[in-house]
Length: 113
Length: 109
Image (cartoon, rainbow over all chains, first blue to last red; front, side):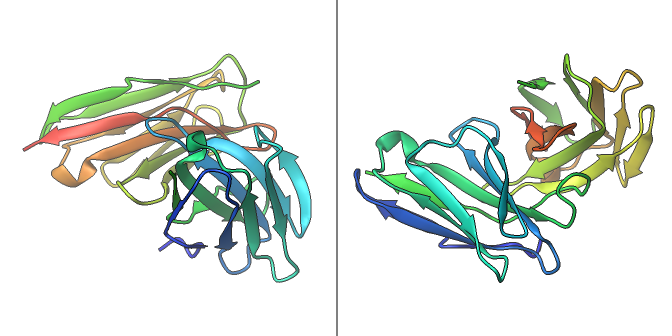
């Protein structure tokens, strides 16, 4: 158990809809990362937050946004969903955003129909 | 941007055999990490390497941080069925962590 909690585990929704994925980091970790994993693909970095502030941005679409709250949990919002957004979305956390290895949650599997 | 070339993409081995996989890059990294992902789960950290030339073991797993800081390898000795999964390398220079596309390992009993 990595200590990183993601909800929901599965999400099925229709094109055009909006969903929110939630992540609670490991206790004591200040940095949260979001990754997208499509079928047979590696992990694509989306965005990183550290202590409530955006720290780094990857290939995140404009339809996607995220935030980290004062209690350090994070939410990833995906809007105007397309079929191609179907993927596993992973959250990871770390104490030090620059040095500490990341610990991953078990992901949210999003299916857009 | 930084990219990692991980090979092989997949491998089928007999139980008991040793396994070797590697990651290379044209970029220099300060940290190399190796993860394993089981179906339906998130990646789990296996080994972390912080110094060029460092050789680190974790049970039957051994990984090395290449001396040029542009590569790393992972060896698994005496494979067992539960070694099945996808192994990812990851390199850290500037945030965020960059991942390879993974090596899918299948073990035939």
